[in-house]
Length: 321
Figure 1 (cartoon, rainbow, N blue to C red):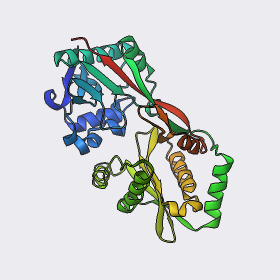
Figure 2: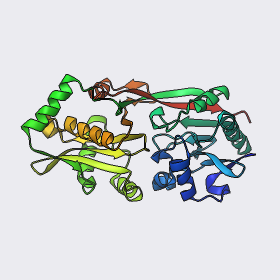
Figure 3: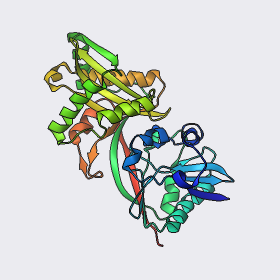
Figure 4: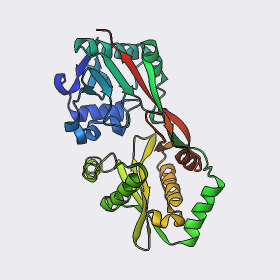
C-alpha cells in the first residue's frame, strides 16, 4: 500500500507535481520545501529527496541530500523534514516514517538527520509527526531558537522601540517600501555588516539571491529605507507559506544608525504581514553552533517588537542495517 522512492531517480513525478503537493495539498509545506527553491543550488548537493505514496498517490515528501552514509533533510535549506498530506492520519505517518527506515536499509545508509519546520508554518496541527518520530526512536539532536511575532494580536512594542519609531518618523524624511531593483546595493551593505561583525559573508551570493528572486518572484521581497536618496537599511523577506513569512536578511548602514530606520522598517513589515493576513512574522534564528551560543543582544532587539521564542528542532536516528 505504501511505497517510498528516491524522487530524482525512481519517480515519474515532475517538479510541478512536487511543488503542487507542497503548496496546495500538504498541511506543513513551505517555500523551503519546493523544488523551485531547492533547484538554485542543486549542483552543490547530492539530492536524495523521497516521495512516499499510498495507493499510487503522494502522501508525503521529504526534501533531502545524501552525505556519505547519512540522509540529511536538508543542508541547503532553512529546514526540511517530513511534509505530509492534509488527509494523512496517525497511521499514515507511522507508515511514512517506517518507509524512511526501509529506504535507509535498502540503500545501506546508517544515519538520518531532519531539521524540522517551526510550528508557525503548520497550516494544520502537525505534532503527530513529532510524536511518531519519538515513538520510532528519533532523538532530539539540537534546538535553534528563532523569534516570532504573533500578527493576530495587537502590537506590543517596548517603550524604546516606540521611541525609535517616533524619532525616525518625526525627525527625518525617509522613503520606505518595496525595492526589488536594488538587491546589489543592499547586498553591499549586508556583506559589509556580516564581515565586520562575524567575519562571514551572506548565505547566498548576490547571483544566487537574484536567481532565487527570478524563480520565485512573488515569494522573495526586498524592503528598504532611503534617507536623502541613499539606501540606509533593508530586509529581505522569504514568504514561507500563507501562515508565516521570514525576515531572512537584515542590514543597515551604521553611519546612519542614529536615524533608527531599522525600527521603522520592522514596523513596516509587521504592517505588511497584518495587511496580508499572515499569522506570524519570523525574525529568524538568534543562536549559533546548533543552539549552543545564544545572541542575547539580538534576542532582546527582537523581543522589543513583541517577538517571542520558537524552536527549530533537529532530530537524528541511527539505522541498524
